[in-house]
Length: 245
Image (cartoon, rainbow, N blue to C red; front, side):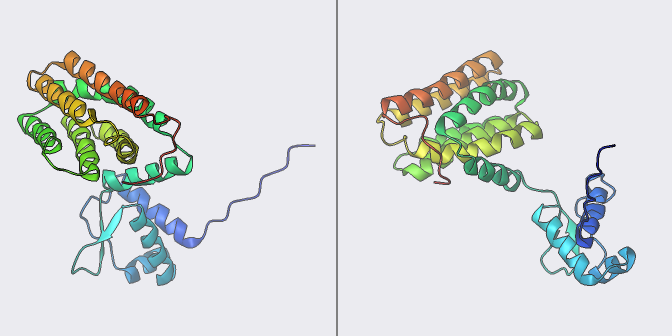
């Protein structure tokens, strides 16, 4: 006897409409900023109810593919922001009980090559942005939440300096987890802020000199320091990350 057939998956009409519009957007037939037809016109074209179109547009909006601009009744094609896309990944990782060790190991793999690439490709504006981020972290009298946010922003500036959107998108979920991971340690270790500031200065110097190997090595040392910091503060690397600062 031959194998039995699997049941057909019946998708609701709104999902089919969302897929059809989404394919036009992702294939660049519909470009960013281009307005979609009205709900009534889309309903006519697809041969469905207006409520079906409305539900399809809600799904596309939740994915960041369309948005309604202020003052307009029509949806426009949009580009999902890295932060919004990465937030979904970060939330999924939290629900999978990601630990401080997991975050640290992932940063160890990603960030040194990223810093190396940034040293090769950075522009003058990128260098100014990285320098400003380092100066912001080193500012006096910032509290722990500000400190970890500025630390993460330094990493983001390095990511932007690579001019590689894939690296930036790969980096962002980790940085959203770095902030709460670092928050549990940064003020329990007196030398933590000083060591972070020193590493940031060395990385700025490496980028200024376009010293790619030096940027790689200093970032590797910087990430290793996070692990040492947790050990010195008596914090278990198996601690589960619990969310935003």
